Amino acid sequence: MEHILEFLENLNDQLDFDGFDVEYSSGVLTLKCGLKGTYVINKQPPNKQIWLSSPISGPKRYDYDLVHKKWFYHRDNTTLDELLNNELSTIFGTKVDVSQAI
Image 1 (cartoon, one colour):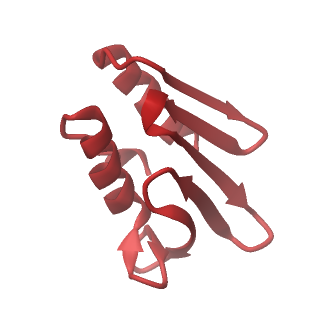
Image 2 (tube, one colour; image 1 turned 90 degrees about the vertical axis):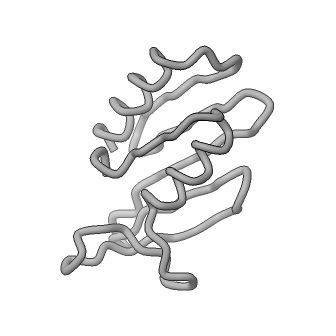
């Protein structure tokens, strides 16, 4: 989560996007994208999952795959980084690649 936070803070420095704010506290990362909505990403240690709430695609629960070393959503087999890359690129109007931060 700290890597994602650092990536998003650096992205904020690069973009001039009204309403952009990112916070991390008690295992919960909140990314505010102005009028486009808010993302909430949090760890669920007992379940060994990451839960995501997206203003675009809604809630999802990701499980870690040791073979691929990625967080997968089992219902559609997409990864957390794929979803964030696609949605954030659309919101910010520029290519966003969080893959190395996750």
